[in-house]
Image (cartoon, rainbow, N blue to C red; front, side, top):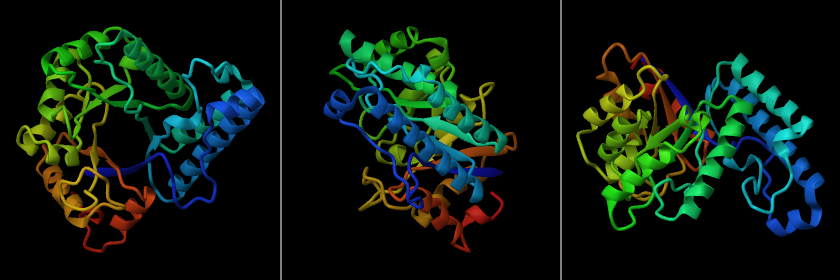
Length: 303
């Protein structure tokens, strides 16, 4: 079985860094400044992909912060119509396609499709539309999200999520993937939503370890089955910072955690010949190098 390891958003090996922007600065410096900043962030993304190509990494999560203040109501710069930004996006998309790279994005914690407040729901849909547009420009295939809050009644919250899903554009729906979390929604509940909507499920092993709801082998199989007819499945792995069940991420991936998930991969049916494994670690790409540099690591052997 082939395991494609990936990491998220930033690369600690590069000297260049992403840039952010405060609203006050945007109000003072306006469009020319934010355009320069977006071009810089896209250049940073390209440098990440070049590093990935040089180091045989074909799976990467693109930062949601490429366009700071993208959905803020005071943001008037039409970045998605700027020819220089579009040209840079096309360059990135072409590079990723040529090198067989899979790109994903992960809208933030304030994207809450099951909020009982219409205003929050509309802002969440706007945020997903920003991610859709960026996904189209860059060739991103997966938008990962969580279910959201419980709001005192989980059953009603799940029903609201399913109804809100129907309001999304086709471009968002075809890229949206739903992940279990460590506080509110188990993999069993995410799989139930998947059955109602057809949305693929991303199993986060660490979240499942903290908030279990079913046998891990069964959870993995059902999650992979939800991808049939859509694409090659992806799953997430992180290690706890201070303990096995610590929700805070470790700098790297512990050896025993990687060996743990590889045991489940080995037991998969032959039809699952490839899987994408996103490593969520504070030191980003260093987590991949760390695993590769261990001579006894099952990453280096046939899974």
